[in-house]
Image 1 (cartoon, helix red, strand yellow):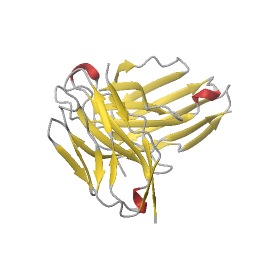
Image 2 (cartoon, each protein chain N blue to C red; image 1 turned 90 degrees about the vertical axis):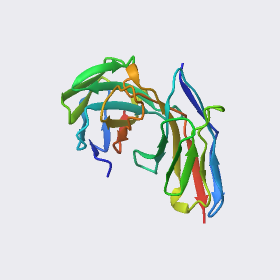
Image 3 (tube, each protein chain N blue to C red; image 1 turned 180 degrees about the vertical axis):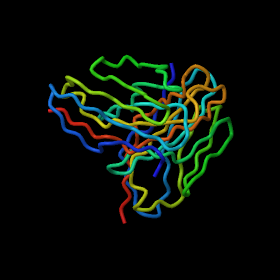
Image 4 (tube, rainbow over the protein chains, first blue to last red; image 1 turned 135 degrees about the vertical axis):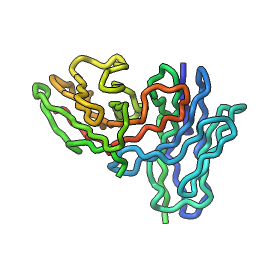
Length: 114
Length: 117
């Protein structure tokens, strides 16, 4: 079956530190990959996506590269801010008859201190 | 503002009550979804509607009853729920529900926090 595994959290960093949140996946087919972010008390927002191997998604200073050979889609940011504190979800989607369904990882809580 | 609006944002209901969650999307999408987010569990897909027809029911108990009167509106009718149904219920939409090209982006609402007492 399809699954997404994220690194265990919570992750606690100081402002301006480098961030990596690991994400690996298994899928029957060629998925699209996504990172969603959930700020406290809110729903999910799409952060970035990549739809084929070697694509790099980027947004708000965050980046992730679709690595087919390692089945990974790690999220990185060079300098985090307090406002980046949130829960980050890695997800995959397959086309065809999967009806646009997203398979999510368990989420990683990020806390950034001043 | 994601273009997907959910009401109410918070709901407390007794186990014998009947209530409904409402979702409206302003994106011109053809597919709508209900997801459930429980503590310490990955988000779970509940229902998928494509062009107002239900195309997937992910083994959800019958005490949850979805309704999609048109492509812009989606409801989740709730009755005789259990305390373990307390969770964040997220509505989402996308242009299409199933395409060969899987880069179909799904947009989420802010969710409805449900507490069953």
